[in-house]
Length: 407
Image (cartoon, rainbow, N blue to C red):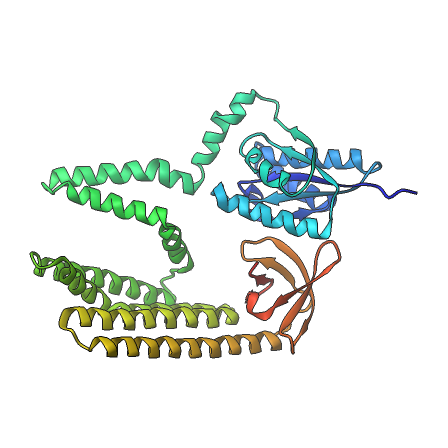
């Protein structure tokens, strides 16, 4: 008897509503898992079209099950859409195809933004059929009014649509009120655009989200103190810049940078101390090693920048000595980092992680840990399809209820 063709039923949640609304991470594999995810999403938000799309995928799965060897999967992207969402879906698709090498797929979409991922899917697997699932409402309403209202609820889009005009109005009004030059207007907007363009805004938001402020917590006091030290550093830099107004631009910048760098190591150490207290109290010991590496990196960069600024201002130390000291600092940093990672690997080797679930750093389910090889420094993960993959110790980011693995 000829072997049945392998057919993959694909549903895509490109804006990651499954995680944002019901904390279900992709890829969601299998009929039972998808049915559970769709019901949870529908109960949480009956108007969400993704739930209907998953139900449609399950219906298609049932229709094709007798004719093909079928599997149904829902891929999840990212709330911010764009390349980040497409890359995550692409990675999930690659992993699923490794475990279930399908001959073709049926692609189901809600017709909103999920269609944009179709070229990524067609580049990896033959698409037999495409089905657009609309709720019983006007098609254009689905594509315009409904989507706009949904996106306005998203903090990411709300910051752009409401936040940017608000900043412009505030700067313009303050400039008029205090007779300030409109050059300040351009500087602040330029800084904001730089933070957007280079992803600094996301890092700043993540920084504050990771700071668990509580007035009965020692770490919260340290976080607030570190922020105050950073603000004082910026004020000191501004005062140095004003004091040297009219000098050469390089010298003005060097003095201003030195004013900021003066308090940077204290702010960094205070913040890191608070972070280490939080990690220790939450028993997230593996992340302590990573935090120490970040602390070391910032302090070494501060040391190199401080020496460079002093050399610009006073030609001391000599240039050759500056280069020599920089090399010594970099080599020392490498050695200490190597020792910290060796300690991290030793901690992983002693940790009891068998039968724990493994997931990627962005929440995708990878499988269950079934063992580890101490000599090769590897862990073994059994995927949802039953195959075994190996992951080096240095790819393990966190060990908690689940093991977080860098993919």
